Image (cartoon, rainbow, N blue to C red; front, top):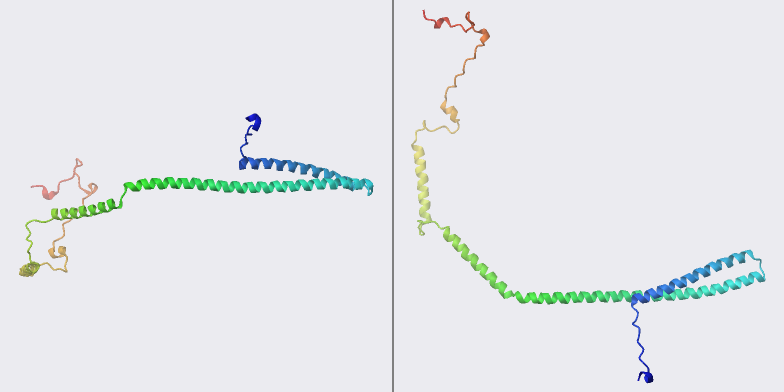
Length: 232
């Protein structure tokens, strides 16, 4: 069958954008080299035209120079075309990279969304509300326990505040009566100082010591005994 219909030719894989860009850049470099060589030849022809007198020789040199200029313009057009192709490939590569980044971002967002859904299944708003209500009840019970523990004993609950105020007034009246019962001479003057009220005498001062050099000594060098203290 292959001999009759022929075997199916295998197709080469398509070039990637990067491979196509590199290939076009190589072609552009070869065109640039050709243009550079033409510029060098045109420079030589220009020098020959400058040195040659007008006539058939100069006209022949100008004809060759014009032919080189035509070749140079053709290569320049090819180079511009290659530059445009490279620019287009760069735009396509930029768009492709943007799509790849967008695809990766979408995949990451899908994975995060799936993870969030799994976490939301374990957390319910009803459970949170129930927990908050239980915490409020526990705090109320705790406050009641603290108030119960801080309660004082042996204090009647039916104490009248007006009766307590009357007892307080009576206590203040008793205190004023006791202060008025003390004689005035026993009550200290509020304006005088406590030390001035006592009027104590000043403490006596010790007599100054007599230097040894001024004391009288006996024949042994000891202080002499006063005559008033020697008994007759």
